[in-house]
Image (tube, rainbow, N blue to C red):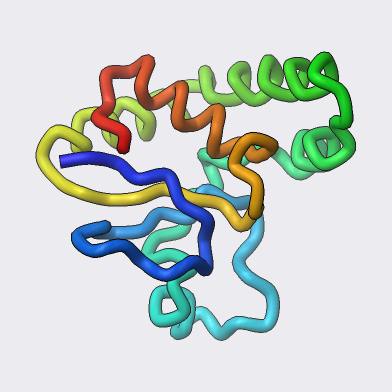
Length: 128
């Protein structure tokens, strides 16, 4: 069993399982009843998304130094007790079931989900 890291809105993979949206905001112009049907997410988990201010910093990050500064701040947010409990739960569930976590960004390398991938692996999650 594994966690897949995905771009929300992309077609689902076979046996992907439940899709978790780790984004600050729901998709614009899409009725809530259509989120899963349109391959965005089944469950919204904004607690695993960077804050709005931090998202703005990530979008402006042009250098590796700026991106590393974003990563440091995002990792600090993921050390809060509420986020830590969710991350531990996801890591444990990854050994028993397939599911995915994702964000809207096209480029995973410049998206918080690349860091979330690392954090989950560090917690012992099975990540594909």
